[in-house]
Amino acid sequence: MHDDFHDQLIALLPKLRIQALALTRNRAAAEDLVQDAVANALAAQESFMPGTNFAAWMHRILRNRFISTLRKQRETTDIDDVPMSAFAVSGAHEDRLVLKELGRALARLPADQREALFMVVLQGLSYEEVASATACAVGTAKSRVFRARRQLQVWLLGEEDRPAATMAHAVVAPSCPGRKRWASRVSDLRALV
Image 1 (cartoon, one colour):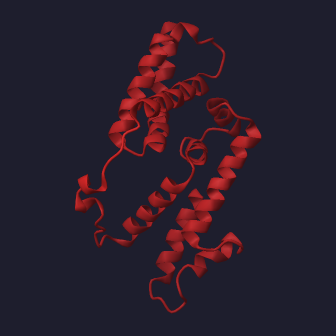
Image 2: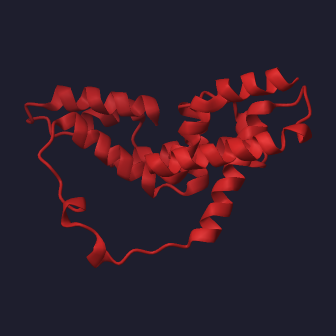
Image 3: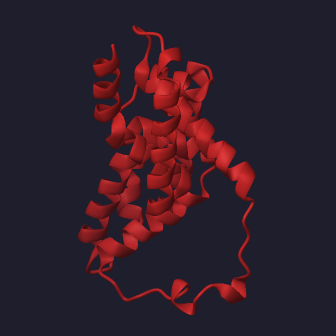
């Protein structure tokens, strides 16, 4: 059992990192969170019941650790202390701008919706696994993912009532020479949302 526990833990590390990054939105903080969650899991490995969902158990530990850390920190930063470069936007390539816009939109989502979306889309977890990991009903997990996708669609495509198939063409004016490029990028984004 001891070796099986460690093997499952090692195999799950990439997904834990993705979840931690979704929660913290900071790579260094995400790594710290994963490390803390693994330490907690190793300390409590005797309480894990073989045959139960190990991934959900670990995701729950990671989420609880994140919440505990937030409660302890309550850190604030004065805007005058932030370097001006943090506010600057470089003239990067179109793809980079689209990714930045996606990142901003994801950051605007409520934490529970963002977490559920990342778990389903990036980690490939089922709604049942998300529900188990976040201690909610399966319907709630589905609703969170649906609302997150819908809100991203509204923010990124700027259209609320149009069918998704027509939105890619409505993003850029017909006279714009880069319309096809933007439409394909919007299609790529639509795959996520």
